Image (tube, rainbow, N blue to C red; front, side, top):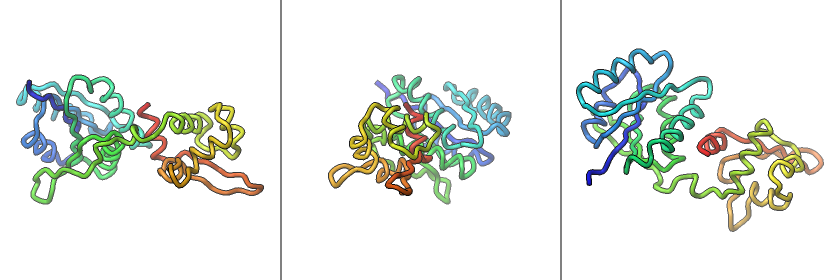
Length: 217
């Protein structure tokens, strides 16, 4: 049985990187990530490619101002809806501006998906991405804390509030947030930021990476 491959590519003025990915890697469907301003160009490019390749294609619009979160939500949705149909997913970050490329690469890292760009000669170059996704190394309890922080507006200054939202006691919250010698907490994993306040209190803030992670849930 032929391995079915889905390519997700960032779209921009320089389209040669997308074509390079098509020439050098298997493809059975292509999804383009594009900005609103590039919608017409992406639609035209998609129509031309569809008639040439004869493979399904679709477009996903990345919205501002939180480009990274928008990309993460789209790619997470793609994985949920399309993942069972394809044995391999590749993310091509060679086209588009730096921001959309960074967003797509972050998505690859979070989900453990292979990603590639192109070198100075236009040849595809696989990028170092862990096969193990970030999702697989974060416990359910930590995810629950991240989701509670998001629900609280992204920042809390009192663990009592977080206790009510998660039904986890303060010692357990502290363990999952700060970690110990044997297990890294959310702070060390780079998913939240912690700041010491007066009277022994701490401000815990859900950062961009943390928001990206829970957007996949």
